[in-house]
Length: 346
Image 1: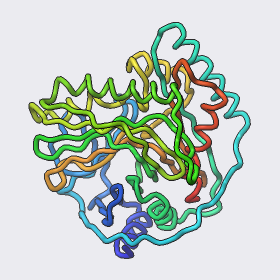
Image 2: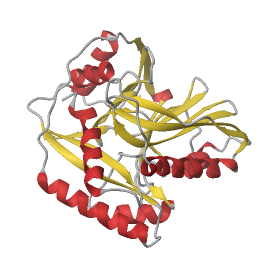
Image 3: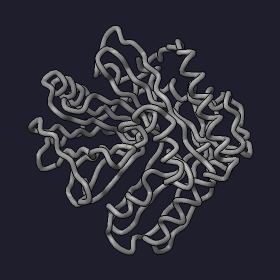
Image 4: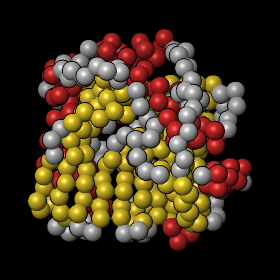
């Protein structure tokens, strides 16, 4: 593990592009360390092997680290116990703004503009120091069942994440996706009780993915919905599996992204509301990232529970799904709970 951590420090200090990541419940950390500092993007051709970093809004650039132009390494991960921090200073003005946008969203839902929309915001935490390896090591140890990454390009920036949500895994002609929505704080020894708002929110995502994938797949099946733990939170998850009729990977990703789990439904109306009302750029938050054609497998994750480091600040991205059953104050509290993922490592 120390080998890849040293490579991360060396690359960041040298301002060379890289990504290091560990898949959920895995014991290996992988890394792409680009051999030059060129900024490489891709549009409609997802046929190359490498690592992709895509934004929420497809009008922005999708960054690509080609495997042929990178040193691809792996190292064993050893779990260790670390203490999480409790940074609880929040900006009151951000609460007022977030609650106002949630209220507007509920009004639009009542007017049948859309059934669900995901409202997000940023929390800014001032850093007294920045130790890339220390932050990444903490995230690895705190979130064993997440896709935990550190990503850097000198022309784009530095990102960390510990996302619980897979977008798509493709091996041969078989694929797996998931719908993940609904959020509760985890309480030791207490079984979750999901309310109608959370069940509806998750079902919207499941129905959307099944409908969109039906045109690409034979033998499409959805497994039983289950409760999963992600850090200090719990979510409802439905795994969806099938066999591809063709290998149009870009087309498949394009119909999935962004799913109602991070955007809303219907997608275009919800996305228009987000771009109009949120008042900031999500950038790569709620985009997707991961391997393309690495060892004959594509493995992509939704970029949730993430933060961007800008100057001496950590900008933490958080959000939540709004439906007709939403209560604005509870939606605010959900984003506060989600921010703890990144805050715990700072």
